[in-house]
Length: 264
Image (cartoon, rainbow, N blue to C red; front, side, top):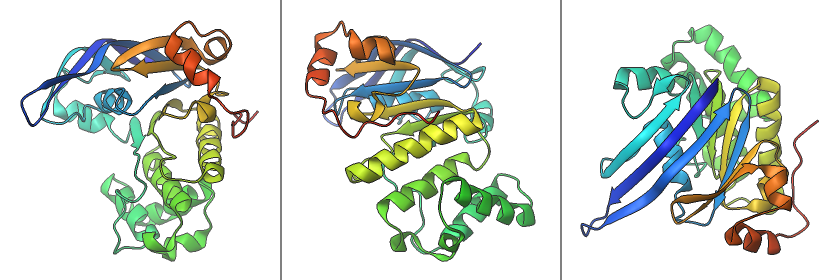
């Protein structure tokens, strides 16, 4: 049974000048337990909007139609109480900007521990779990005594990944998690996410505009253009035999370096 099912999803946004923007157009996709899906496309193609729809976090100026079911919960029709039980516990998200979720005036260890206590962990257990999470994302224990501004961009992004994994979700959504990082750190973050997906048996949806970073993932690939999914299928198949001109153009510009293979 799929853990994510999207059928005929449409999302419209009302702009400040009154215009209606059709941000996502008749999107269909599914993801099985422990599977992985990469969504690529240029800026403004609807990738992030589609991901936000999976969590029921679209802004007030959005209107939707279609069906979105995540881990058995109808996200578009379900009550907020059902969505509150779904978010972070069953499905969690890594957002684009690594600094935004972090408080500048609290140490990393304090923030992770408070997050865990908020979600029901015993305070003593929360501290132990905080250290487990830092180790999981390959950060030294000393980071718990540091403030966000004392960490590099890549280290902050690892902390945000730890935040997302705090409640042991079954599904991880990652929205361009390598934005503003240099190419070497980008590859390290993607490798970390793929390794965690495997070790924790997560279902993963990874959104990116960088085909080079997702081109060697296993699973499926969805290519978005102007709100539409114009290519959808196994990564290996689409990378070798693309049928849409947009994907062919992207592949023609793809360098032969910087690709990341999922750990064996």
